[in-house]
Image 1 (cartoon, rainbow, N blue to C red):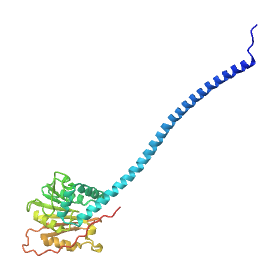
Image 2: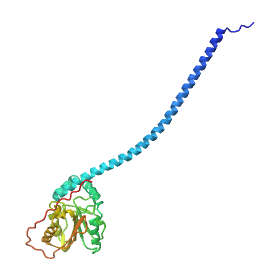
Image 3: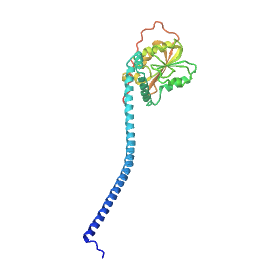
Image 4: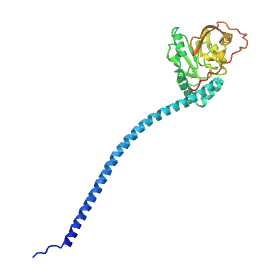
Length: 289
């Protein structure tokens, strides 16, 4: 007769089976937890990545705006520094200054263009219009031409003169000692360019290169010719120019930002000309915006 397993053996067998089952459940649970963790990590990564992208995008936008403002402020500061120097030194000193670091010329003109963008009207455009209404055969000398905008917008032959030449059409020179021959120019232009402390020598050079009957056009910041704010008396300035050998043809004070003065070189010059008393032109210093 077959013996039945004792209750003790049954109990041991049952416990062994339960322990095996528990081990399988723990392994399965751990495997599930590991998979869940991986899935969660997978979920978190794109979520964090998306958040980072959004934050980066927003941060980049704010950072870009901030950097642009800082660059503009630094650029504006450099422009004001260079501008002040040009108004308070001689033409030769300015020429040497830019020879040492030609890149400063670009900084200056970038700042100059930014300042001009706030003006409702540009004096160079009025001069361009004046030339277009005249003969295209008039030869022009643009003293302090900058980006040679005048030459690019008229049919006339234009000698573009400035301290630095970044354009093959621009002649780099001291405005008081240009390479132009005597009495070869029909129109001499100074558009916001009477900047040096020796500005009178620029006008003397313009007188030298102009033909008899030639035109001298001067556009300058209005405040420089306002005696109430420390500027020169425009009458005294015109008188000095006339004593140089010109006649005053027209004075235009209609624009709130600048004045325009038109002179013509006399056909006959006074060989016994006395020493001219030139009024001081105050520097045009731009305020920080």
